[in-house]
Image 1: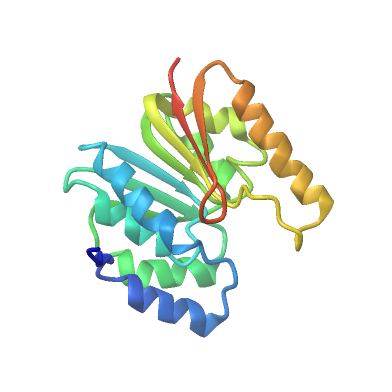
Image 2 (image 1 turned 120 degrees about the vertical axis):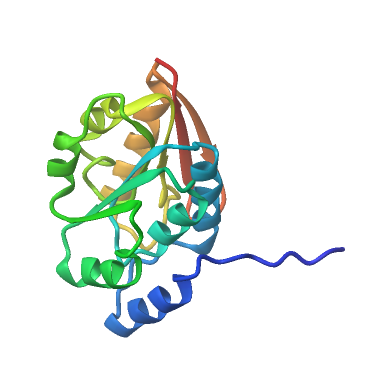
Length: 192
């Protein structure tokens, strides 16, 4: 059997080290990174939106998959997180790293203009969902993680997860794939 070697984004290890140094607890699992890179690579000359930059770990993967003429806007409301992302990724001319509320960036995004949305925070995921999906082009990807029911979460939060998955599954403008790996990934493709 052949061993595979994961090719990480150039900045990934440095961002991971800085993330551990500040004690940031909400790290996306590694498999979502290469998944996002592959999806970004499928949208040449694309426009991408990440809601919830964190410290930039998944951001680095999206950039890793993007073509040279693609653009990414990523938003977070934490100064500490954004400072790390900017220090390692801010020199890339393809990215706009925004310190703001996610809702404000969603409101400024043109309808049907985004090829891929990774929603890794509450706005665009648990609320402001219709406004977020309105930004997505037909054929565009909407990705969310942390969709597995967990015993260490409150029943209230697990109920939100169940309700969100049910809502997405019932929409007639999306094709939904629920992937039972990593933290639980839901991939949606907009069809109308």
